[in-house]
Image (cartoon, rainbow, N blue to C red; front, side, top):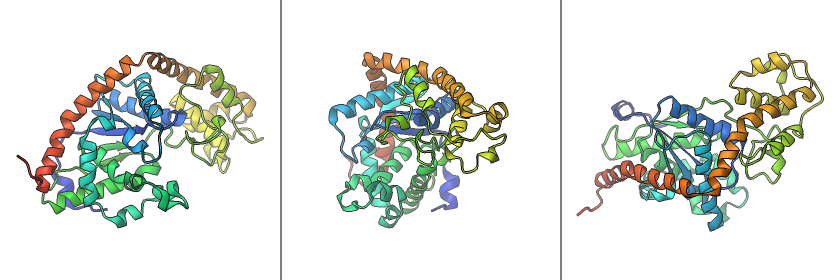
Length: 347
């Protein structure tokens, strides 16, 4: 990491939290616990939050244009249904603020190929067909850096799979500040990795992350699932034949059991030790109905509000338009200053 002391200590701007969710595929329980619930907690704690729908990132792979528009609205609906208040948090579509793309190009010229070659997510997503992947998929982390630094965000809610990208963001910020002799112009954002369930696993395979790209709908609980569907998916979730242990250490290599206990703890806002103090020694025949009831009670109001908003999208569109204007009011002066620093001609 490029951790030059003057770059770190010189930034004196306000605290800002930024994150986003990609507009591709249906949102699920993992998104709710790992992102939406955390965003709401940060907002309610008084953190100034900038939360966007990452539609520019979505098109690094092919997206049906009509579906992309619908998914952008669905994610905004999930933000609102989860308790995010557009009067407190700035909620907007990434593509509606042109400064994201402008700053990303400057950062493409600051970042080094060697840095991007080390990004493990590109290797995972491109697989054996690297040459067929879009250039956008390769430079995805640079756009991510622009998303963060455009608002001079100081904190980013980050899962383990995104920590490497945040390190790249810090490197780009430090190199820009150093190369152009502007110590402290961009902050070096810190990760916010603590959350109720930072890594939610598949209901069909406790060793795989819950994902909207999984072909099996039974592997995840979608935020648009109704109460009966939520309960049925939990009843059918893969488990083993052993009763729940008395302590967390007893979960050991029992991936599916560990996942369900983690879900209960996250939904109830208690520790896994407290879950096992209540259910340790009992079989899944007793535990699954309790987890299903808790999941339905937690998610059914969110699902119902999402369906209400999606039935009449005027409210969503108003929030997104207002959020884009508020985001641009902060982003545009930053990119204008970057252009001056870089030396671009200005009338």
